[in-house]
Image 1 (cartoon, rainbow, N blue to C red):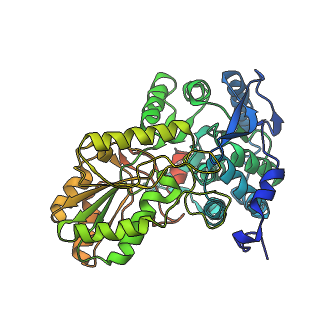
Image 2: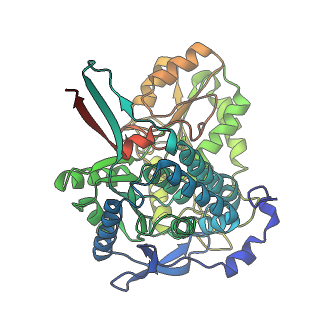
Length: 501
């Protein structure tokens, strides 16, 4: 039985946590290195508020070295000119090594991000594996083109690697978003400089080590832990980086677009914030919709860009359905992430805890009705625990309905009919995800089509897999992760026009 097939209860997670080796370096040209400055910064366990280890704190000088290595490696052709089938085999070996280290990688993710170990084990690591294997298998199946031209000409349209890519990934899903960036970027022959969030660098460093063991040439993938203010900005402004991909806040995404314009117009793809509407009609399967509503709001402690933080309920079922949601909310109680039965852990740090509390106060100040939770939790472990929180009688103009909180706070809003639901859902600067619940096929499709969002579920939330693109409309970003469409982000199209004598 492989580790992936094993049960999460087969492991003593606390005992493993006490002895696990935590990566604390950067990776440049295949070597584990310290920051040139010698600086380090702590990685804090959100469940205990205690430091796990000190990790290299890279800066501009490290970035310059990594970029030169990446450029030289790209130009050498050792990876960029490798046959796609050979690149595929390296990526598949990489996935096999990750699977062999399944439990260790899940634990590293849980310790640094505060995510429940069950989620890391059953969701995050399998998602990474699926992304790598699916994309690897697609590597030698993305064809170039011959354009339909006159008989005395031949027009070749080739898809070439973009070059050197900076990939900046977030702390809420560090492993799966890293896989979303690395898989298509590497499959298409690019060199990548990966900047994990300094709060959650462990899994990025671990899987990069495994990539080199799988045969990825040194210099193709560099990993630089460090902050966004110095390191991230420097990478974004660097004139020898051809493209940048980022998952994170809309504010930072806007800065990266500016830095691209101020430098070399590097191609920029962004997956940003969200304030998604989860729309429940009176004719829905209400039991299923209520189960999904609490999952949409409280999964990963609400630290999910696609979270269904605006719950829209049709007038005639508003009170009854809200009662169903409140009853189910009792099953979401933040606890020790290393307990396999825990379904909700802490938020990532004190700053995030303070931000959530600030929004709770704004909700109260603006007249929303707090009907569940709302407080910081005292937990024996210490750490940054916050109660699941539900506000009722929310107007969509309120701050808690317009701004991304990134915590377990749900705003419940009334609507009258389909037109009203569409109006409310679209009254947002964001457009990343959402759902509509109705057993009427006309209502469901009409609303799903009209809501301006990159992903819309019908009678489900968090639906989708690696075969479909993921990204946003409006201030939720541009470009797409996942699916074959992700290959477009990391390639250039080149036309060669041939005329026969």
